[in-house]
Length: 196
Image (cartoon, rainbow, N blue to C red; front, side, top):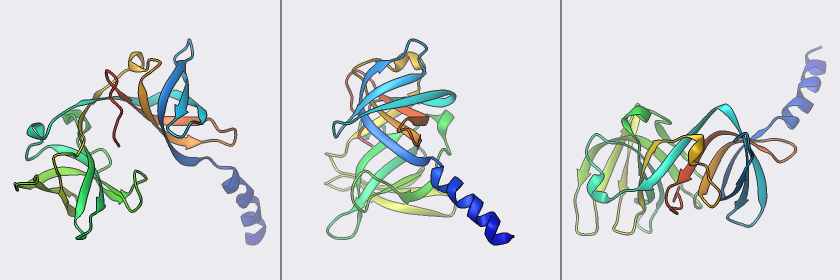
């Protein structure tokens, strides 16, 4: 009986949607605002469905001077030649998003990269740029920032921010028909390409 039940579950698991991230340019928005057509950075076209619960986040420019102790941030990073984590990008969350995704996990921005979300507990300055300790419940990561690291700030967005020509990152699940059911969409403001 157990094996029979497992046999019934396997096809369901195979048909389940898988987590997916789409980075690209927004080509069009349906009249009801729920379907986006996006051309990915590699040239493929995909449909993105935005349900009522999907979160839209604006991504705008920021600077290293805005990165302060206690800020809740997200940092994509990868090991450098000496083994230290070097930031590929840093984004500052608004206070209303404090705690979102806290922790560290593998990320798909570059080979071997990780994403760490947490509060800046230590900032040590150097000539090349600061080293930040990003702390979260259960641990922390030391990450080196340099003058070339892209830094942006997040703000709560709305469907009205999703306009053709904007650069977007849609995260959600990709169905069997290729449509992405988005749980969140990041949209760059004024031509900004979200660096994460």
